[in-house]
Length: 103
Image (cartoon, rainbow, N blue to C red):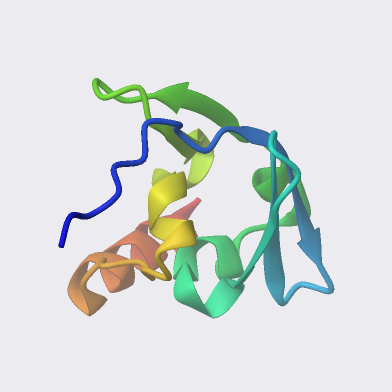
């Protein structure tokens, strides 16, 4: 049995947040992916202004990565499509929260 190889990379068209509970990512091909904010604690803690300050860049394999510079958050689109939540450790997140509260 052979496995299909996917040559087309999913591309981001726009990002929105719904009711402070979900991240909505619209792809160029028309799909919309909804992700619980709880999967990405930094986004869950972010202000509306911080959430809206995002950009997309490509990694070395030409895959889209969504980046929130103010939050130091990077999310590969492929992670959203495969249902992979943040892998940030509790210690790292707690340190980020502590630094954030000093500002």
